[in-house]
Amino acid sequence: MLRHSLRFKHVKFLLGYTTIRNQAQCAGKGVVASAVQQNNLPVIFFQKPGPHVLDDELQLIPSQEIDNPLVVDSSFEGVTPLFSPSFNLASLVNKSELLQLMVKLGVSIHQWERKTDVHSWVMALDFKKDVQPIIQFLVDQGVASDSLGLFFTKNPYILKSSIEDLEIRINYLHSKKFSSEMISRILSRNPHWLLFSPERIDNRLGFVQQTFHLTGDELRAVATKESRLITSSLQGIKLMNFGFKEEMGFEAHQIKELLLAKPKLWLMNKSMLVDRFDYLHNTMKMDYESVLRFPAVLTCRGFRIKQRHEFLCHLNRAQYDPKLPRYVSPLQIISDSDTYFAVHIARSSIQDFNDFCKTM
Image (tube, rainbow, N blue to C red; front, side, top):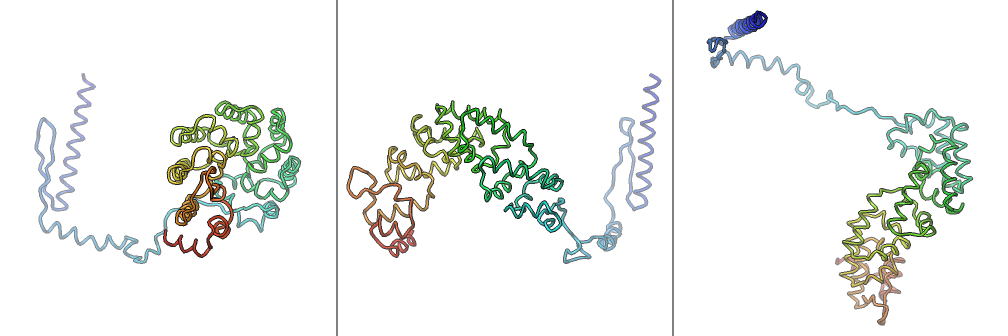
């Protein structure tokens, strides 16, 4: 009880001291303060200041504006934004033998700068000790020497890998019956493949095989034809399957047929692909069999298909049924130059085609 009593007295003392201090400060500025005791605690009420007090305050504004940099420097030359520190590897090329040799290989150093952490370790590498063994390893695996620049541009992180780890990843592919030619194609088309451990590659190959019910040979064919599919987002593959089945109406066996013929489709934007199929199927009246026979039509740009189809409609030659005369193959819609299409497919002229396109 004594301790609580002393604490209460101490609080009352602090409140009383604060009240006296506020009264003194307000009196010095011409502001009258009165303390009223309510519930044994002081409450301070401030009265509205007089006009002479406002005049005194307004006189302080010019002196305060002198310290404002935006007023003194009307052109804002003294005001600079805050930027995070940057590192320019390209500026060090003339001073670094390593970067000079990488440039000779065809590496685009400026693209390395977009990868936020490369500069933190790449300058510490020794070309003969760290880089040459990686180059020899890639060449031994069938990567063309004139492709090394692009390879390192896309995947500089392989320079941090040990030869032992890389050999383990290649040996895994051999154990899964990938031929040397398959491995060469995989690495050349997908420089990031070697960043994945054998365990991760094995899980992804198993996912693709189970999802599409592929045989071993079919799986190796897909991985070789479009190796980026194996290292892409597994969730993205699921979303594309949903698009093919639920939004475009393909059956499971048709989806598998599309994958074997054109695995690149699974790397495309789903909404754009659905819109393109909708135009082919509902506007051009192209059936599923035609799309399956010519899946490349799904990879063609939409405006190119629309231009050529509508020009054929204008000439009354838009006939995509192979059982009827004057049949136009979907492959003829997307292939060759505009001149070839206008003259040999549409049986018109390039001038007429260009004039028609201007009206669209």
